[in-house]
Amino acid sequence: MELIRDCLDKQLIDRNGRKMGKADGLVMLIEEGKRPRVAFIEVGGVTQARRLHTRLAKLVASLSKRFKVDESDPYRIPWSKVVVSGIDVTVNVDAEETPALAWEKWLRKNVIGKIPGA
Amino acid sequence: MKKALEIALGIVTSVGGFLEIGSITTAAQGGASFRFQLIWAILLGGLCLIFLVEQSGRLAAVSRHTITDAIRERFGFNYFIFLLIILSLVILLVLGAEIGGVCVALEFITGVGFQWWAVPVALLIWLIIWKGTFSFIEDGASILGLVTVCFLVAAIVLHPPWKEVAHGALPTLPASDKAHYWFIVVSILGASISPYLMFFYSSGAVEDKWDESYINANRAISVLGMSFGTVLSVAVLIVSALVYLPRGIQVEHYSQLPLMLIDAFGYWGFILFAASLGIACLGATLEITLEIAYMVAQGFGWNWSENQRPREEARFSLVYTVIIILGALLVVVGIDPLKLTIFSMALTAATLPVAIVPFLFLMNDEAYMHEHRNGFLSNAVVIFIIGMTFVLAVVTIPLEIFGGG
Image (cartoon, rainbow over all chains, first blue to last red; front, top):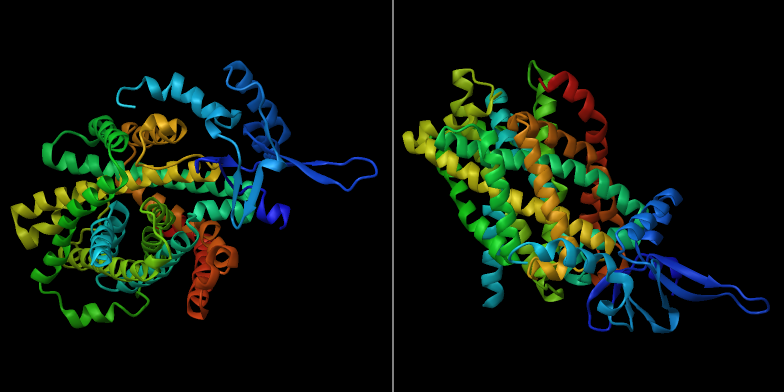
């Protein structure tokens, strides 16, 4: 497997088969005397924004804070829960219980859910 | 048997959904200014579209990923954002033009100015997407869209000189007005090879849960559906050549459009034109709105499907709601729908390379396509199309200035 080709920016699918975002970032752990290893996949608006521009990342983080959407952005998924297969990345978590859907839930609660027929 | 029905439905939806304000206006202007001389441009656009739509469907059927997914995955998030910004700006203008088309059709029938219809039409579009499922929207709009076959009937009823029509299939240069001629060529190509159509087709294939067993169905649908659709565009051009040219009308204002079918059908031609334009544009607005929302949702990896309730996909629903509001605003402020159409078709042509270049890489990527990668012919055609789109991208703006008026 090649990390950038097969993992970064791939669709993340949770254990129930739900789409839960994409692999926005990869976190490597470098310890002295050990081989560097991949520790986490990062998911969230702040990581996405940082890849475009650092100032954009600060803006997303402050928006997230002001509207009390998500304090833990970016959300990190331990590599042990990750299975890279073909062109998708499956992670052994339940998306609804993770901060990966923080904005989705915030919008559901505060905007879309308030419109009749939603 | 089930597959045969699906193929038939696929062809019907492609034909019924083919014409929209862009193809109608550009073909009408072509016929009005250069008689049958521009038929080749419509045929060329249709041929390119057949190949690109077939490939979009094949990619979705084999990989279960849409074009947008695959572009973000292979070309990275930053390229995706670049593509998203450019495409959604252009497609938003096209959306404004289509909403304008629905409103203009309502103006023809009621006499009430088109701007006044923008808000009710936007509400209707939003309500259909909010409540409807994917197949309800796609099939419903396209089956109603079959009314546009009236252009073909009109073309036959008017007895065009078929020999001369056939001559138009081969490119020739006009004696004068070359800049205007090439500007219409660019607009026709921009209206035919519209990225939203290919992206929407691949999203639809994923919505309908296509797999490898659909490869042949996909080929039949794209070849037959797009061919019949192209025939309708040619019919619009033929009718316009016979109706507008002898009267010296250049189709510079939308109020000239409904004349098109009067020679063939009399008073009912007027009603038929308004109905065709309204329905065709309504279908296109639904597709375009959904496609921008699909593109954003797929690019960011959100849940997306028109078959789920809005609260299950709050972000997806928010995007299409905002898109409809923005599209309708273009009409509310009173931008002339015909000018907006011509401008957005040319702009589409100018931005084609960013959307088409990825095809060449994705369709040859083993991880996505397995043994169904592009053959020599498909690759050769894509390379030809890419070359052509680069030329279009360079010449569009100068042509807009010298030949657009």
